[in-house]
Length: 150
Image (cartoon, rainbow, N blue to C red; front, side):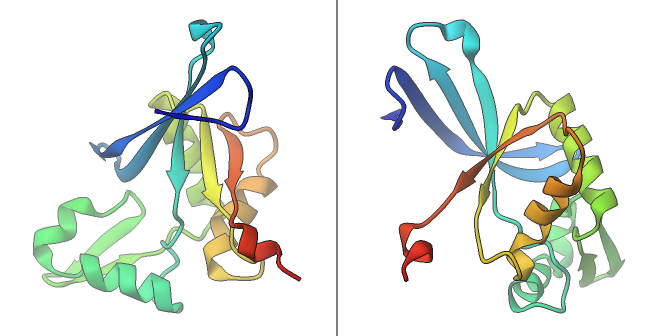
């Protein structure tokens, strides 16, 4: 547990949890107020590299899941198309809406998006999330100070 920047609040970051249905990797973040434990919120840090093979990072993620022994780890939007070949592209708005539904049903209150320049493939999920009117899962941003350098 580490203190947050908000007075009277703490943040706990729990280990990675692999959820079998839907297959998805989450880092769980729990935020609570020391004054009122009834205000417990559970969140997940997102690292959105599920962009298909047309980007360097998306290709790397796909290649890691290509061997058949890793097919059980495919997210719900991934498909095994051969013994050692998969497609993994979570870039669509429909996928984002389904992710919101799954996260809400598993008790995730918010996602913490790692921020990247908005015109890059790593921001596709954040851009899709922003386009969903009143999503059931709230959001927070994780930023690096260096991204704001002039």
